[in-house]
Length: 336
Image 1 (cartoon, rainbow, N blue to C red):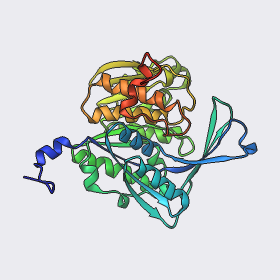
Image 2: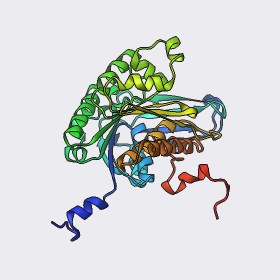
Image 3: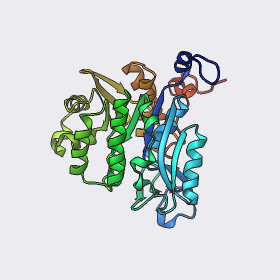
Image 4: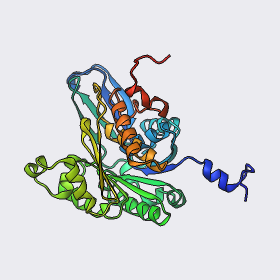
């Protein structure tokens, strides 16, 4: 059998890059250009960001075909969101909503090493994401469907879309990846923990920070402080996911895959902006997972991508391309 180009379907399938599909809300991002109180900022910078689209951009830069489903308002910020993600090589499937605005987030860089992020997303276009905004064939044909705990917290329709997409992906043979990505402004710890525990039993890859793992396991602060990441990962694996990743910030990450534990140290850097580092880590991990690489490769690329993202301001701007991954491990600072 041949396709429209005359190539055999088997060779076309072999040539196609792994495909990851994701979905969620991306918002406009306002930030002060120099550290200090936001109330006294003379100028603000406009950009955009969202966990799932950050991951999609990270995957695209690493050579993986990525699809992002989202919803934006019929406004200038929505056009910015769509244009920026599409410009990064992501297959953008966006619905323009003329009845709701694109959400906004404001980042206050209070000092050179700390920042606060405030969200203005109630009633936003992104929060109105629904099953009708998704394409069943695209999801069923994916290698990996990546979801986060942000989207189901946005609205009942968004939560239904997450559950439906996961069911479609599993029926089509795709792996389902789930990053807890807890946002306290969207739901309580108890609500998030209950949802994430139930979802963990049905997903293939579960990704959580140490505090998020403790939340899911119902551990109080004292017990959590005495429990190392490997133990948290093993206990999370008991919830049903085949593969568990617990991230530990600058210290690296721990995985439990098919009962075996493996750790990855962080890549030493001087961080400039840590927002988006978790999304970069996920992009690196999923890029190697979709390509069929082993756990060691997944962790190595994930840790390197996460470190890279901290070297530049912005949620996604510092994400590395595959050819750049070796730069953080190079002995010579200049490439000629």
